[in-house]
Image 1 (tube, one colour):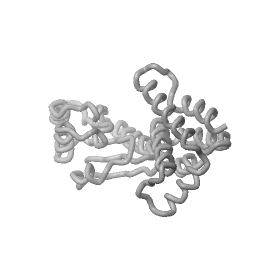
Image 2 (cartoon, one colour; image 1 turned 90 degrees about the horizontal axis):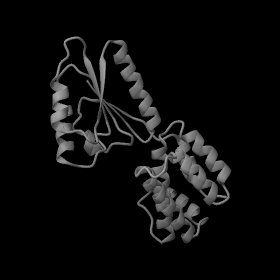
Image 3 (tube, helix red, strand yellow; image 1 turned 180 degrees about the vertical axis):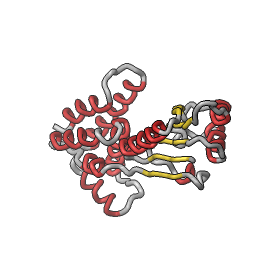
Image 4 (cartoon, helix red, strand yellow; image 1 turned 135 degrees about the horizontal axis):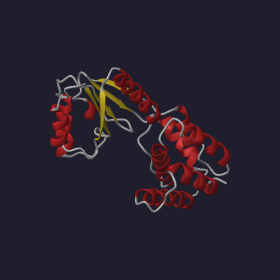
Length: 228
């Protein structure tokens, strides 16, 4: 059977995956985890076609469906979606998967974990003078959602606010645009430019190994500085 766990509520989807895997373990299954964003079709084919004499194997593949489009990705999806063996296959992605990437999995059990309500409260709290409330919401949020998801959503929110300051707007419903417009009024253009530059610097420093701090640590420092 194929199971797909995805959505912006990555903490919830991760827990659902862990519960499913734990159940397989209790039934004597061996668990093998594969990195979907680096997976080669020949390696996946080998894993799927190899049978153990002593136990059934369950396969966990992380971040395959949100991987950048490539021939390898398409081939891996074809292998999984057409698999007819007795192994359980669990696909987990750290964000919501597009319908186009789900359409081949006609018989899969799909669970979409939405972003927690705290995410929207946190994003709407990003305004000068609101540091205490923003940090409180941040620390609640990272208990349910991976901090890189929170960081990415914050960067997107600041990009939207910059759009609003420039006179354009994302293609959202009127009430969403109205909320962004009201939030953007609280900022100056230069303040938002500094904000997005700092977020870019943080992301680069973590991904290149220049910083040993987590995204949460960096956001603590950044919000304390820019929202004071």
